[in-house]
Length: 122
Figure 1: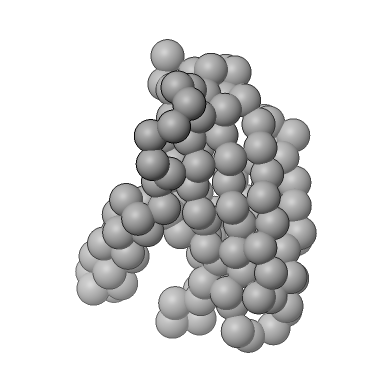
Figure 2 (figure 1 turned 60 degrees about the vertical axis):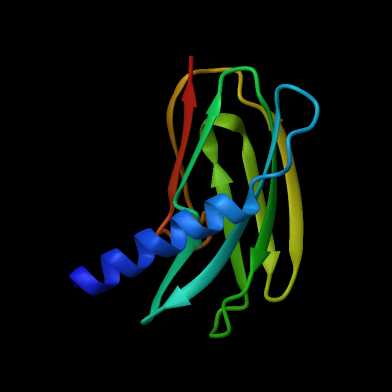
């Protein structure tokens, strides 16, 4: 279990660093969030996204899960974000992080799957 946690933490850090968009217009951040399966558990990576309040957030969602079911959801209920992403497909969502706090993101289609959190700093 420690190996799983360490591996997932390292993978999340790597994806978070690799997926950050180059500095562009102030107040805009882009992340690539990938749905994958690790030892039978379906997860979105990175598991934590951190932005400042007022940031325009763009999330590129990619479903790389090879097993069934072929569709997975990505939702941040507090921001009215809800998408269904088919296997091998990418979808983009945009919103302004206009309220500070910690907001869970989930697979609204399969509640048992591992989600993550959006952290919006003041």
